[in-house]
Image (cartoon, rainbow, N blue to C red; front, side, top):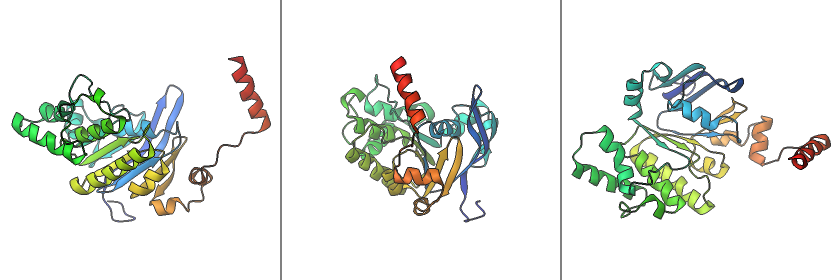
Length: 268
């Protein structure tokens, strides 16, 4: 439990260290995700958002620290233990990551066929239900190449929720989409959270999306957490980098830096 607010931590990241060669990407990072909430991880490009997400879902082992999901430290798990835990987790990747050789319906049905012993008739029914939930009713026979970018994202959501996960992770779900389609995905995230009573973790840099969907906000800068709290407090935060992010102020470069940058461009 979180002592401060009485909420249960379904994910607890403690003193996490991630390095790529000599570069330390995440620096003794601490972060909690409360059960039943939507936590949005914010930050500029290269701050470590997606790296953090990849470690939480077990795609890479950290150099130090702990990642506890439902009280179990995944950094110590064997492959079969991790596989069992991940059956309770859904992931929507930034690129959608649909299998282009398979129909939309087969993409959504794949986790059910791989990880359950359900009859095929039941799998077909569940696939149609999940596609209907994301607004893609009747598209099960389409191929991914026949879908728009926003529809591919919705199909990826349908596949991610096919096993009714307890936790849903979304990496930049609205990346590359126009504002109207992105707003539709925000509404979808809100709808799925209510319908399936999931805990949701969203990595993004989209401020409008964050204010719409977040119960809890975590902002990273240079591999460290510089803010953690509710969205309404985020606007009032006095940390210089948070204020810059909220106010959308660009970096200020001195004349020497601009000159060096211009020389570098002309020398390429």
